[in-house]
Figure 1 (spheres, helix red, strand yellow):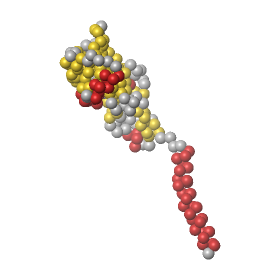
Figure 2 (figure 1 turned 45 degrees about the vertical axis):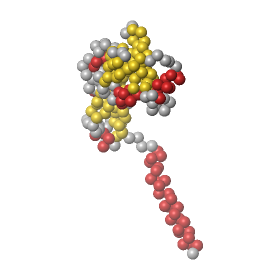
Figure 3 (figure 1 turned 90 degrees about the vertical axis):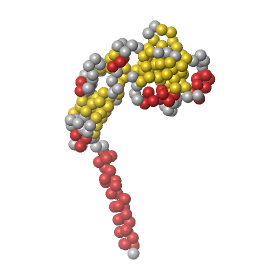
Amino acid sequence: MESLQVEKRDGTGKKHAKRLRETGKIPANIYGHGEKNVNVTVATDAMQAAVRHGAQLIKLQGAVRTSALIREIQWDPFGNDILHVDFTRVSTHERITVTVPVELRGDAPGTHEGGTLDHLIHQLEVECEAGSIPESLQLSINDLHIGQSLTVADLPIPEGVTAQLSSETPVVQCMEKVVTEEEELAPASADEPEIIGRQAEEEEETNE
């Protein structure tokens, strides 16, 4: 579990938040478990590192000491800078619903048989204890041939974690590549300039 140092903040409003961000801090709120909301700040670089690492459950230290989920992150319009964070208090054995990345691993034989890979589910909502959130669900596609698919039932879901989708829901499939009419006509179109060129040369020879 990653740790973040937080400091209490007194000011609120857009101007105050802007001044905080200029000093390398992000405004945040902590709420939940029937306790009063607390306005805090967290270091920008530390928060960005936690997000890059895919952290969801955080150990808050400093002005507030508790385990908390990163419930919501507000980004700038370009999706580059974090503007605000909401944390919600949780206990490590409390069952919660979170979203976990679904990653493909390996090389699907079907892609060498003329098929194309279609990754249908990139994230899966699961229910589990807060202290047992999987970093990701890694699905092997080494036995995936053309015309086949893998479903939620094929995911390596740890014990105590429950998927919130039907086990029959396709996660990835390898289907035969569909050749469009434009692609079929492409070779003929590519030859056309050469034909025109030869016709022009023949006309010049005739004129001579």
